[in-house]
Structures are given as structure tokens and as C-alpha cells.
Image (cartoon, rainbow, N blue to C red; front, side, top):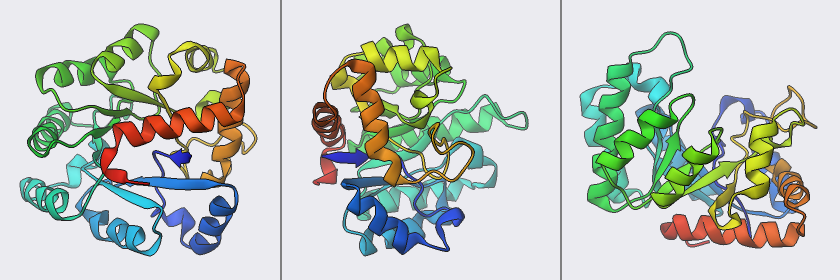
Length: 255
């Protein structure tokens, strides 16, 4: 089963042609989509998309790059959504050490509080780990959750192993398709296939054949093909394995 474990289907870039985009990815064989939130601002819109498109599943969380817009009361609203909104995970949550203008302490606060919610509600998490893998792992060791996905993984082999020890899958997508991304490609080729899930992060992180254009879930079959080439296995093996991995780590999805 071909599952896009991380797609911002609600993004403004898709507003002009979202229904046509959905038809395109369905025709391409994409059978499951996980849509993470960035904060309270899009909880309702993503819930609506999941009602409209039955293959879509919601993850509710407060993204580290949007914690400056969040209020403490948003955590209470988030808990309500996690209890009543039938989510597959808490997400997108984590830390970001890439953006220059940021409040590290505020990111840590919201990350820890959301890990507490995930643990309380026995939900996996979708992690944002950009240039922050070690501090994210530190918090995960302190605040153990049932697992989840390290989205857009771009770390070292040792860091990958640490995530796997904590029952996390690693998300690979468009970045893996760029010939100069040697480290990501080597990890995609050699890490245990049982630890890998596919994603697009659409409309972001486009694959090499899209260039600087808009990424879409319709690119997922070709991303799967690229992983199959790297691992020297059939694309059907990749689709079956990564789909099974996604369903295992997100058991509430029920695709």
C-alpha cells in the first residue's frame, strides 16, 4: 500500500486545484495520506479535509516554527482534538534549530508538553527534527512515547539507530532523490527496510525531477521507485514494506 506519511494537503499552494490534485494522486495509486497540523490555526481545516477525502488521516500538534503564535490555552484545545478528533498521531511537533529567529526555550516547552499528551493518550508522534536531532532524542529518552516517525530524516547512521531503538520509523522523500544527497541516499539504501516510511512533505521538499516546483503526493510512486533502485529491490517490495511500516507505527489509521 502506497502511503504518504507526511503531506500538508491544506497548504495554500493547493487551494486552486486541490480536488484535481486528489484525483491525480488517487489515479497514481496513493492510498493513504497523513496530514499534520502546524497549530490551532489549521486544526479545523485539516479535520474537514479528512472528512472530505476518506484516504486522509489527521495528526494534530503545534509545529516548533509556530510556537511563537501559540498560547498556553492552545495545549488544552489540542488535547480536546486528540481525544475527540480521531487522530493517528500527535504532530507535527519537535524542535527546529535552522531558523535564525527562534525561541529555543519556548520550542522545548511546547515539545515536552506535547510529548506528555502523546504519552498520556498512547499516541505516536510525527517529529520535526531539522538540525535538532540530538536535542529531540534527549527529550524522547526522558519522555518515552509509543514511537512515531522522524519526518524528513537527515541525520547520521548513529542517530538513525537511536530513533529505531525508540520504536521510530524514519521518513524518506524528495531529498533522497537528489544525486548529491550522498548521506541520505546511503542511509536509504542500507538502513533496515522495516524502519523506513515514505513521505512527500508536499508542497515542500520536491524531488529532483520537480526541481524548485510544487511538490505533490502524486510524486510518491516515483519516490518509491527511487528507493527501490537504491536498495536493488522491486518497487512492489518497497510499496508493500513501507506501507506495512506506516500502518504499524500509526495503528489508528486503519487504511
